[in-house]
Length: 246
View (cartoon, rainbow, N blue to C red):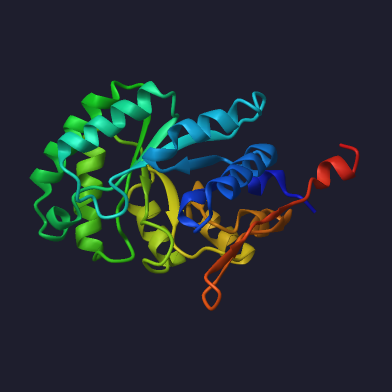
């Protein structure tokens, strides 16, 4: 059964899935059709995601863009310029990677200085979702980043980059929600089973970034990359609501 509540809490980033432009466009269209929480693109795909969304004016799916994904190695000036471009393009949100090297060095002053400039570039017109890199950093370092974000009035965080950077655990979310209950928590990092997703939500997660949004909401088959053939098949969208006459 198609679970609309589950779909509305899932976020997709099809540009990470080794798809060509035609398949990315199809993935975006399916996401808008299904009403998932948000779809996040790369900077070079701003026009593509805007063009596809125009076909679904009634969709509640938000659109966003990554900035300096995943390691935050771009200069602050470039990050601010990308935030400005996303804002002017009408994006709803941006996923921002902080300077991971500065964070690993516990140079939180540098992280805070950069985030202040990014906040200025956003002008309060676009939602900022900085990453915590919980799959790599100690809780001490994550806590330092959380303190910076909280001090700056940021209310949403993304736990890590997705794809192959590590697995988020329910215990991570429990710790984060217990210590920073004011944060909207977006989970990223190998949440591909419904049982694990439900455990994440119970632990305090608000949304989940996943390439398995069809599987988690029960509406079809997601794209699959074959390491042997180096090919990636497109996902299959099935409109169960339409079939049920709803």
